[in-house]
Length: 306
Image 1 (cartoon, rainbow, N blue to C red):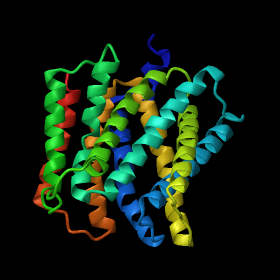
Image 2 (cartoon, rainbow, N blue to C red; image 1 turned 120 degrees about the horizontal axis):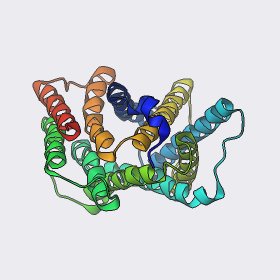
Image 3 (cartoon, rainbow, N blue to C red; image 1 turned 90 degrees about the horizontal axis):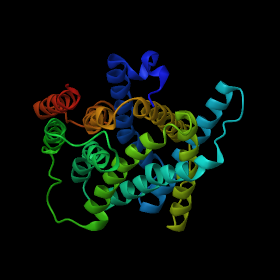
């Protein structure tokens, strides 16, 4: 049944959808240089420590989300017992599996190859929606939009030399699994959105998923220590960013088709490249970047065009 509030809901208005989706992807894109800087500040190199760092980030995001919505609703944020297994599964897919695969994969492949493969997450979402839902089947328009958008991701990475070497399961394979986990979790988030508010789903899935990440990181011998004011503020920024983006994304998926929203995910690597150029001084602002942004934008238009 259609939500009666959708007619006046900001998350259903075309202009708001564009602005909120791009804001979310830009914030996710900003995480790439921020995480890179965090690894440098805390001297994090091994996979276990990277996963532990991710666990700290998302646990803090979960606590902040829980606190924010508890204050907003003037009561402790809670969920129904019947929703617990669904939200635990969401946390496992969206937070634990996705970021374990992400960090292990990037530890065993080049940044260029990892970025290209991870840039396909929007495509995986649309494929997952085709098989997991009745109303969002793949068609020529969606396939063309995905192809054009992914071409932009490839072009923005062609300037590097990271495409050499072979393919391994622990490297490129894990990044591919990360993208697949993102695709499936986007659809499952849509499917459980009627059970609880987006804020409640976000808070509890982050808390559950992050606890598993922390446990995994510790089991792998990970260690994150030596925090300074700068590194602590950086971790706080990443946590706040996660809280804001996950909440916005959950609301967008609740009130709109999966393909209409997740196609914007193609902009994340482009934002990551552009923001890395700004904050890390990397010289990547080239005609190829502009062409990539144009193709990604075209892909979004094609998928959303009626």
